[in-house]
Image (cartoon, rainbow over all chains, first blue to last red):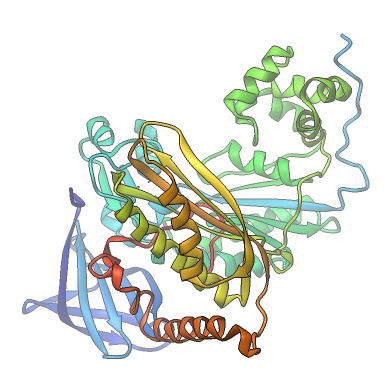
Length: 84
Length: 418
């Protein structure tokens, strides 16, 4: 049985991010599609060993939610999940 | 009637020198999920430890609760009640992160905060502040939670002169309530409640009270204290005291909290009577407990192991260790001994391990303890690797291919150090 309202993706993506006080991801590029981020619903940092992973739950204007993970060591972005 | 006395209200007694606010987050885990995923807002949602038909809901959204889906409802049953229900796996890291933000907000109003559980806190204010001032703080807290932690998150707040009534008040209106209980409205509030609406009164206790002729919270408040003491012992007297505004509940401000035990419990997805599988679980659980003890520089003298069988009943043993320890392997050997000696007459559904009798661990430098020192050095080395690369990066050989199967769990109680 899997969640009936989300899909695991776990693919590396590109993200345009505005670093600063609020640290806002603005766009994500996934499978050659550019998706504009409308709102950040939640963000938090989780420590695994000495590695920090920053999670951003964002949504687009079509009502899709994306769970993004930023690996602060490798400076890489993963799209972990899409919820609908 | 003899059993009723003419006790005056005790709210204004001089020992109640503070005003207490209880902040209770509404449908917490489910609201956190709806906060993160806007598409799920306004929809019935259930959070589960396992997405398996036999799994159970550990948190239901406000919308799911309205339809009758509650904590403990089986997933299959929840889907029968509401075919469109959103079912999601729990995400402990997310809930801990939000709780961390919430606690920051609460601690900015008073340094006297007791974090009662992951989603409940008691705040203590000096009586110099008026109820109006504290109500204004409550509104501000609600506003800041939505602004800083998440716009979908709501809480119910209760304000009263005792911890008990603050909790009772927060339970009155859910979600998003703010209720004050004072000496003027307490009887009116109690008159609208059932006994089981009262914090600490279970259905069993209700039956016991009914047998004594007490059927409502108001009757319990005005019953003769000696009558209760005689028929129910000190627990009856404590109940009466709480309802009469006496502060008898221990206040545990976090800085003063003295941890007395470290524990770990695990619900098995696949219930089993296979001792090898159970042993692997015990090994992992004792590793987590050992890690927590070593991080705190503590060791335990008493160990407690228990398990529940699938079709009822269980097993529990307490063992006093010959020597205090925080070595995971040593702790495992003790619990494993109990497993080996016991004939499992049913599949195990849940396992508990708890250690207590905590004391500061001390340096061992005498060569007579060479074996012990080697064990300590090994544990320290393993801890360093796991600190650097994450929990269970390095583990016992027996766990090979097993580590991933034991997931992080979220506790409804106080958050333990990871």
